[in-house]
Image (tube, rainbow, N blue to C red; front, side):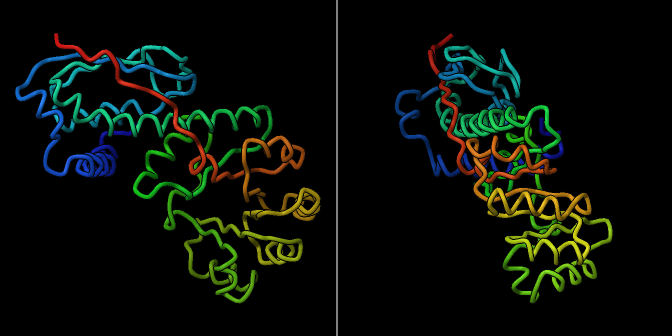
Length: 284
C-alpha cells in the first residue's frame, strides 16, 4: 500500500493527469443522461481468476473527483480472486461513477495483470534462493504503479530509476572503453555505499568484471552452458543476476544454475491485463 506522503506527492498527480487525459472539458455522454446529481451504487466484478492489485489507486481515482464517495471492499491487494467474484461496491454520485470508471479500471486491470503474471513466475522459484526482479521496462509515467504490482505478486524491485544504482550496461562499457575502465570510473564517482553491477555477454567480460571488483555480475543473453561456466568462474566472488528475454517459460531452465537473481522485463512489459468490470449500476 502507498503511504500518505507517497500518495499525495507521487501518485495523485499521475492519477489527475490520467483523468485529464480522459476528460479535457466535460464528459459529454454522462452530462447528457445525468444533468443533475443522483446517488447510485455499482459493483466491481472479477471476470477472471488472478491476483487483485491496485484497489487503493482504483479508490483514489473516484476520491479525487468527489471525496464523498463510499467504498466497501471484499478483498485486498495480493488476494487471489476468482471469476465472478464481487470485489467491491462503490456508492456515490452517479456522475462521478460514470466519469471515473474507465480510468479507475485501467489502473486496476493493469496492476492486477502484472501481479498475476508475477505471481505465476515467482511460484516457479519457490523453494530456491533465487530472487525474482523486475526492470525499468515500464510504461512511461506508470512505473510507481507497475513496480508496486510486481511486489504485490511476489516479485522484488530492481533499481527504481537511474539515480537508484550503478548498472554498467553494454553502451556504458563502450563509452568508457571497456569493463575495467567502466568499473574504475564508477568506483571513483559513485558513493562508496553503492554496489556496482556490470552487464556481461561472454566469459571474457566475466573475467574482466571480476578482476575490476564488480559487486554484481549480470549474465545477459548468454547460453545455458555459458552461464554455467560463468557461475563456476565467479564462484562466490560476486553476486550473480541472469537477464535477457526471461519469461515464464524459461524460468524452469535457470533454476539449476544457483544464481542470486533473475530479472525479467516481461513482468511489466508483457503481462496481460486482468479483466475486471463495473456492473449493475443503479440509483439508490
